[in-house]
Amino acid sequence: MLHRLQHLLGLEPLTREQITFILDQSKPFQEFHRHPLKKLATLRGKTVALAFFEPSTRTRISFATAAARLGADVMNLQAEASSLKKGESLIDTVRTLEAMRPDGIVIRHSASGAPYFVAERLEIPVINAGDGTHEHPTQALLDALTIRDRKGRLDGWNVTILGDILHSRVARSNVHLLSKFGAHITLCGPAMWVPREMECLAPNIRRVPQIEEALEGAHVIFVLRVQTERIDEPALAAEEFILRYQLTPERLRLAQPDALVLHPGPMIRGLEIDPTVADGPQSCVLEQVTNGLAVRMALLYHLVGGAPVEAPHPAKEQSSAAD
Amino acid sequence: MRVVEKRQLLSAEEIGRTLQRLAHEIVEKSGGTKDLALIGVRRRGVPLSQRLASIIRTSSGVNVPVGTLDITLYRDDLSTVAPQPVVQSNEIDFGMDDRDIVLVDDVLYTGRTVRAAMNGLFDLGRPRRIRLCVLIDRGHRELPIEASFIGSAVQTSDTEIVEVRLQEIDNEERVMLVDRVS
Image (tube, rainbow over all chains, first blue to last red; front, side, top):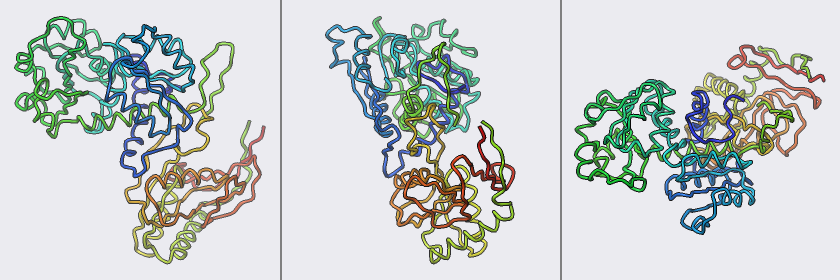
């Protein structure tokens, strides 16, 4: 079926229709957090393995909560406490998890492409929760849901992404998603973090060195965290970054009056974003978190739920039940 | 497999008259409209619940709250179907606690949809009472569930299908009995 996916590895290969389907399917789960009883039995008897080979707090808690609210059980693997420390290879670790028969696996890894590698070798659905500097698809989906809710539609906005774009998988996933919806994308940050190659990611994408110019006419602004853990080379001094690239109330006024400010978190107040902006009416930071639960519930429902989908086999005819 | 129409169970006019009767029965058996609320089960329970509310509004001048329930996440066959059915939103803008709820659906068959709907309602609160109103009761129950308000009870066989077609969804208005012929 057109809209149905077996895995969620990245947004680049997805169609507009597939993305719209996921966003539409997230809507029913948004109201869920207002229910007095926040527990469904929809995925009862299913198990979701969370394999986080890289530290994560918010994404892991969001996936674990989404799974729990759908009634699924969670297997938790954390990098700090895992056999990775003892030298086990990625494939041996995930095969060990698979031997405990989970119905799906959510994976985060510092190597770009790791979820693809795993998806090719396991029989169960794989969801990418962030791979190296490549993609973080669920983050871009929750951002898109937030924009669509606040602005009424997703198409055709001027989108400005600020900060360390080179190391940001959030930026890449957002560029892939939003450019499918006709966004005009402006990248702005220190030259070493906004290389020329980034312009090849999508059509209608430009690099602007001056933050004032980059914000002019923006409808949506993404502020990225400075990823100190991914940076080996001597970075820009914090004072200079603040001076040249911090999103301040004065700079925000250069954008459209109702421009949205999004941040994937964790937010460092006073570094990439001024606290007044972070707490202001244009900030969507907490909605992003709530929407993250809805998007992940929708994905788990569709990817992990249901009868196990047999891998397509040329010799075997597949019958698909219509609904 | 082919589907053939066997006979018409209700005409447009008969659907209208049946809904009039059901609306009056609901008000009468509830001793008024206090705490009363109608919940339509997607899809065809939704226009039916709205029509019942509009009849009650005309006859007793009261706006009975109406909501829409999607039972997809509460179905008991989800682990056997692939791909997963599409989920839709509930549209219920009133509290469930202490309400006198009438669930509205087009056809009562196995009772599994009603079981799912009750689970959905309980997640939203604790109604004082839940009753069921259906346009057609076609028998073949698989659960101990019965309707309090029945438009028309029809004898059917296992292979037959009762098709309720409503103006709001199907652009025509009648109830048909169809049969599967292999």
